[in-house]
Length: 127
Image 1 (cartoon, rainbow, N blue to C red):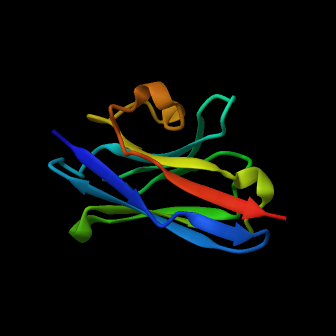
Image 2: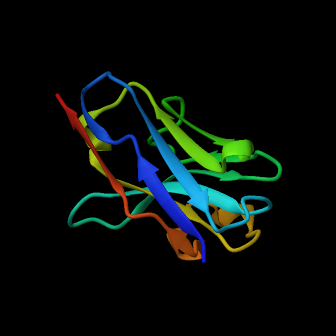
């Protein structure tokens, strides 16, 4: 059974940066999609960024393009999300997720395609 554990959340002022990490265990990191999602209370979970771990193709929500970067370290079985130029609207609980196998790339930011989820880490951006 795969497990995903996020870390790196916290509080930062607008314009600041944070890097989230997601450590994967008991799970094959190769040939799947891994992604970052976020949820604000009262709103639906939103896909932020995703990566195909075999090819390295990346996908981003329009709201974070140019500010966030998703990356992977296969040797460490770890996924990252570098978040720069943070805005108050980025405040949310951020979740790491992974699929069981490959999926249609057009669905890379759709949460219903993901099978494994971390517990989430809070990111708070103050103005």
